[in-house]
Image (cartoon, helix red, strand yellow):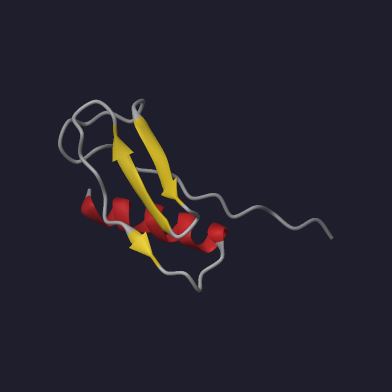
Length: 68
């Protein structure tokens, strides 16, 4: 059985409406967030040293999508 990847889609920026300029950011693999490089808006930073990197990326995307 082939396991499907669980990819989360990032919604458009709630301020400028772009999707093209969105970027996934991370520092030291512990802090994860989404940033709009067009208007400078940043989503909530997810900082949890106990999460796996993939889990934190998914949480950063989820937090960004809740703002839209």
